[in-house]
Image (cartoon, rainbow, N blue to C red; front, side, top):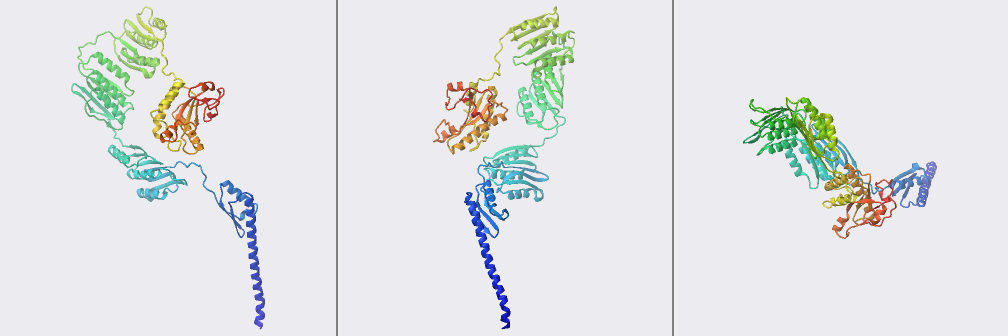
Length: 639
């Protein structure tokens, strides 16, 4: 009985605790329900019916898919006015934004004796870990540096094939740089020899998947040649090389072409190597071989920058003088000529000394004959270059002794008199200066007579035979705007400007067409031109309008890249609004996808121009209007 009396207070305490717990549970549930009700009312009142709310004790969980980040933030702010912001748990999601163009994915892989490094931006999900593992299998895990970044965008077409090929190419190249982009790979590498280079190029070309744009730049080491030597012989039984060196394939081809022109038959080759004394080696070789051919026989030897030209015995002295003089004047700097004419010592050159300068219609000047000393040769060459242009003068005059004392005065006076003409020749002899030719100035004979009288003296003899011709039209006269427009249209007849499917990127096979258009525009002079983009009717109208505008702008940008002055050009997209064929066939749709070049005419001209669309309004031309991307608002109309 006494034990029962002691248990009564404990039981009462337990009962009171249980009742308290039940009451607390009901209170928490009531608070949660009240919180959810208040938050839902606020969300419904704000129009956010898509949002779900769950109260868990003091925490408020927000769930649902918000249209965008701004709406998501607005929901959180609104709920924060109902409950403490610290109690909000954000479980809302936002779908990816539409219309954002993916970045241009690319990677650079570098390999050398120290290992492999890779850097760039690649698509997430394109197998980064597997790629690095492949590289580690080639160079070892400790010799691979991974600097890649990833972006959560779709894998572009052609990316997997390009990267797989890059890894395969890397297996063949111990020292290389490989650039990878979607659908294109560029390889720069060094091979062990010319044979290895050819094998690599052939193997890589065969391995590349179809459609991959592959650029190869594989170099091979070249031997050092010392002395850099060429020896060419021209004899009665034919021509041949004893030795031939060249610094490049282009140089070799030029030398061999000059030798074949001089009479070389059959196969011949030049060793390509390093150690060339001048970048003008091929030019010096061409001139020397051509000079030997003009002599008719002998040999020419070039050792570094020293040239020895030996004529065949019996070569006429006049021909020798001419060839040697011309070669001396034409050889590039650095090269020194030593010419030998094996003639009997008893032979007397004789003859009347003469100096001749000729001016061709193209403005080329040749100096031939004899000059009294090396100083006069240099002065005459410099004087002629100052008068006719340094690139237009070829000095083929030879230094000779026993010329009259006033020979320098006569030569320089004759050269200046020649500068009055458009074409002609001046001949200087000890007793006369003879000038003949044509001028575009009617008073040229009088001017020349005054000049020669002052320079030579009235007692000196000179002869003039000058004719007059009316100046021709300038060759660089700009094309008339209408002809310019017609030629631009014709340029696309053989190959129209095309684009990558669904994009504003000009297709690679349209580069030639863009070059022709740029060349035509270079001859057109300043014209006001609208570059029009047109599409077919496939897809949404708004999308086609934007695409046509982007394509027209791409063409304008390409012209700017080709250094065409485009300050008076405008780019405008017409979308699908002006078809030139039906859109119910593929041929018609292809015709409607086009770029056109149209003159921008003043309103008065556009109204009467043949082929005017007549659907644009225009007022007087605003001369201060700047043509550009906004040219559709210009107060002019386009034919």
